[in-house]
Image 1 (tube, rainbow, N blue to C red):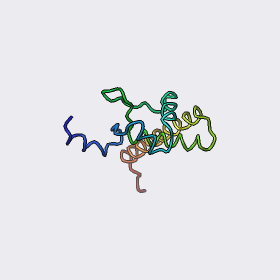
Image 2 (tube, rainbow, N blue to C red):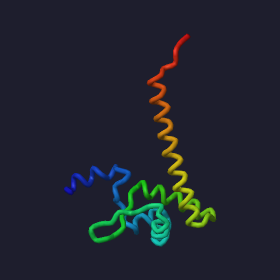
Image 3 (cartoon, one colour):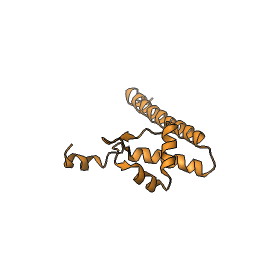
Image 4 (cartoon, rainbow, N blue to C red):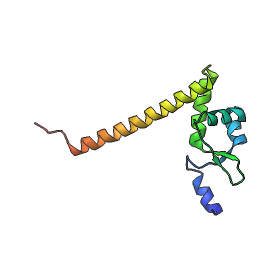
Length: 112
């Protein structure tokens, strides 16, 4: 990938731009925390050619939410499950809204 292509991807929420050390620093947590949420399958970082973990901005937002819950006293496994369920609910609500918009455009209300 050319350097110009890489710069264009920096706006991509799914582009794995952050090393484990940088991600932990940004979140104010340890690398062990990132490993733990990876083991809990909350996030799966991509690997660089050298095998190093790389995180996207989307993954960092998910990790930050898990950290909030852990900081409030929630066990890490439970925090990961909560975040997964929150993410699934958000996706279901988005899909539901799309269906409602589509149904509304197919059957406009009749004016009687």
